[in-house]
Amino acid sequence: MNSIEPSYEAIPFDGFSAEEIAAICTAGKTRRCKTDDVLFRRDEYGDSMFVLEEGEVELTFADGVSGKSLTSTAVFGELAFVTGRHLRTATARAKTECLLRVIDETAFERLYQTQPRLLVRLLRHTCGYLLASEHRLIASLRRKNRELESTLDYLRRTREEVGYQELLANTDELTGLYNRRCLNLQLDKFIERAHATGTGLALILVDVDEFKRVNDTFGHTAGDEVLKRLASIITDCVRTSDLPCRFGGDEFAVVLTEIEPDRAMDRAERIRSCAQQSNPIPGHAQITVSTSVGGVMLQPEEEASSLFERADQELYRSKELGRNRVCWQGYETRHSSSAGN
Image 1 (cartoon, one colour):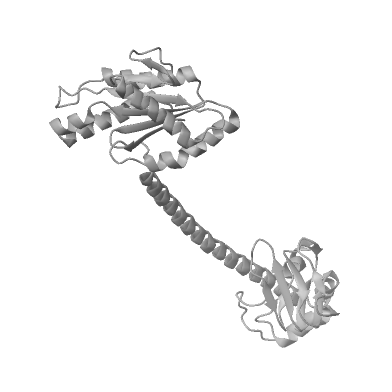
Image 2: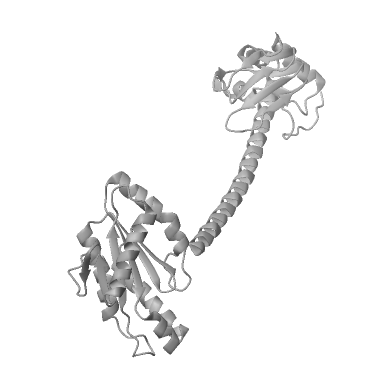
């Protein structure tokens, strides 16, 4: 009996003669199923494979694996036939009335006794088919993995780009501090958290003294150097949990979070004293930096507009009293107190 050279890319019986297929099917039992009958379920043990002679069967898998719709002459469940008591990887359900041949352990024994060479061919061919299926699955997984890696890379680059754009949108280009937009966005959140936790929050406003004179006398480039110098001083005087901002011209603001009044006032004075004691601007030895500072603590149930207005009043009072000083809720200082970190 001559048979066709098998192709392991096709169904398990591809390459078998009609007589061989008939012998295999004859060894099995006939089973008729009604529409929607479940032939077997995923994760239950099985020891038989099926030949679909008439009708249509649907296989559904887990983990997003695409299902299969099987028609006449299809073979399924072959892994359980080869290994014995194998956990099913799919659920098989009859989409129409079906006629099946069940090739189970009894059929296996019958073929072993009557058609041993055919049984060996069937086992070898089925293993080859399963191996080819595994290779196709691995290739599919590798392709999906490459697609996933490409998608993740795209998302990472998009997130970095969005993060960078967001950073630019919230950062002052000259000084590198946060800008007015960021202050407006974050101040309400800081205040809400302070009210919820009962922790202290302070707002400090800082202006450069005689800044217009610096610009008019030495030019805007020198003025920019003054602003960058003060921004660097402010950054050094606050914590990473605080919010230092430049919100326009020579105007700076610092939000101090989770802080007591004395320590907040010390930080305001530290900014003023560090500015006064800083080295002259390079190329302009006659330019020194001094600041007027006003600060307040957040009051119970106070909103951002009221907090900002009170801090601005303290800043105005600092300028009225002669500049280069800190005015803090009715207090005034011109000399550095012990500023803790």
